[in-house]
Length: 98
Image (spheres, rainbow, N blue to C red):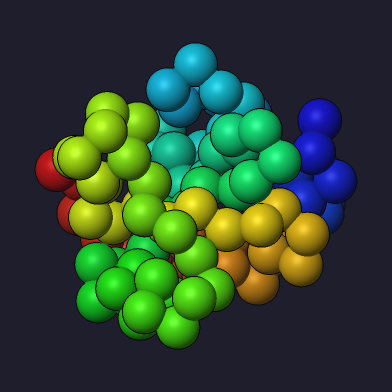
């Protein structure tokens, strides 16, 4: 398991490890908020925040299908991404499903 997953699960032991796009991910309340892809971490954040991170060069669009980026997901280098993963958890915790 990814070290960031371990850190998050220590803080939120009721969260669970699940799958997102065939990759290991983290869920709270049945909703995925982060998953790994290669050496990167993909996190769910508000679309405006995703745009900011991409514009600043911090992250890249998450495009599992070429040319079709997922607007609320951003790809980040896995090192030093704990704060983003926790932000993603908070986002899905207060955002209605769908």
